Image 1 (cartoon, one colour):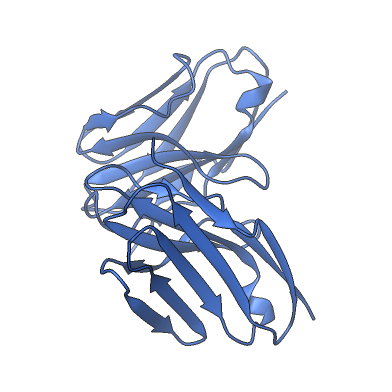
Image 2 (cartoon, chains in turn yellow, orange):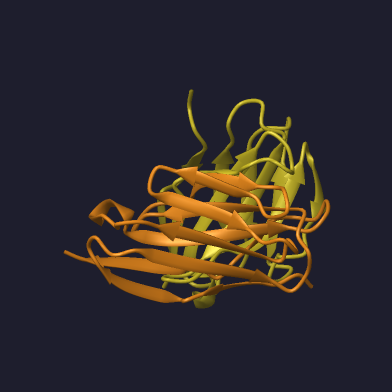
Length: 113
Length: 110
């Protein structure tokens, strides 16, 4: 079946603009995660959804970052007033349950100029 | 909070040599997962270990979970160029979120 998809694959934006990143998880996966990965670095946890609720938002770097999930499916990560340090690959993952293995999407490469 | 460290950060090996990466947690884990990320790609799940002292094998890959459930290792026998990538461990404490390790980047010298 289809894997996790993310859009756009690449996004170049000017500093100060808002961006929205989209994640379509695998159908039936109740858990959804957002991570950030800077070049050559590890995975930085941002937020986790179980269904439409977010039990853990502890990784969001600032109040410029927000995320929502609707219908227990699609999720959007919004970054307001982007800064150059927001440049990174944003990865989304989904899983059948919180304790199960995670399936990652291809990521969105965000470049803030 | 929970921390998961991996060593080494980088490893360069001659093709055919063995490779091992080690994962250490500051707290006892309920389970540990391993992922592989190819250059330019996204992390792909390899395996999950749950039991103390558990050993699992996938072809040339051997995964171990320590007796105290605080450490784990991944050993690759006779590396091939297809093994290139970054290997991440990820540990879970109870019902908390998965915490990814810092990763070990493996490069192969042909």
